[in-house]
Image 1 (cartoon, rainbow, N blue to C red):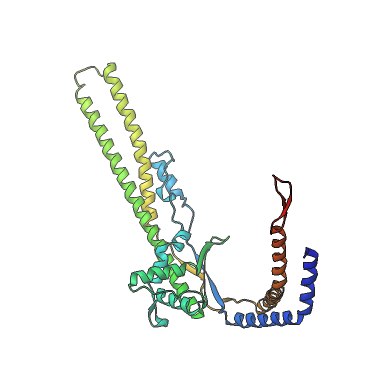
Image 2 (image 1 turned 90 degrees about the horizontal axis):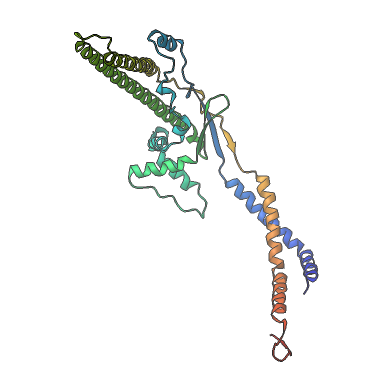
Length: 347
């Protein structure tokens, strides 16, 4: 059987059984239509939160303070470094576990983790395994945090607003969990900002105290040096050079101390304003966005898939015979024996 014969036989078979193929497509279309009706819609809502980030604070008071105490203007507050990334806070495991550990009064005061796991088991397909609920509360919260990870996203839009989008098939869960998400993200963000400001202030105060001790030590050395040269001509080189070195050293340390004092004042000011005001601009309330698979796409796709499956089923015998014939032809090739030169057929 050649490839041309194979094509002709396939066309004849399909043409002969076209009604059955059409019925098979209709059966598959109906099945997928009813399957699409059983798929639960996914509801989602977007919460816009402001303000969660701000640029470095530039105030004229800082520059004026620098001028008054003789600073060089090169001081830089540590608060400009390692700014808290609110997106990372929103996506962190700590935030997810904190949300999963909250209880929702509308759901018999159950943990969010328990509710999410129950929803997964309720909406799972027949071939998916049941998600077991851990026995301890800590393990249950950890499992719930993993489920929550795929249900929400957090990112900044072009207007520097943090957008938190939460999605779920249970419409009643959207608003409660969205509010908990916003609350926990804001809480942890403020906590990190305040902790960072407190660390900056403690560091700058420690730095100023350290430089003050160095200045006091230099002054003590100068006084001691002066007491030992009371009865000696001070213009001598061996006394003049050490005195100039001490003066230069004091000027260098004094400049560092002045810059550190600027940082301390700015860190103290930042600490007072480190707690930002979190405001929800777009509240996670109805109407929600709804996403559901199109019944038309499932029906048309089912019809095409059914026709293809039944067509392959009906022509499988022809294709099997064709490949069997080709293999038989390949195995029955002729070879020439090298010693006698006679032709032997291999069966």
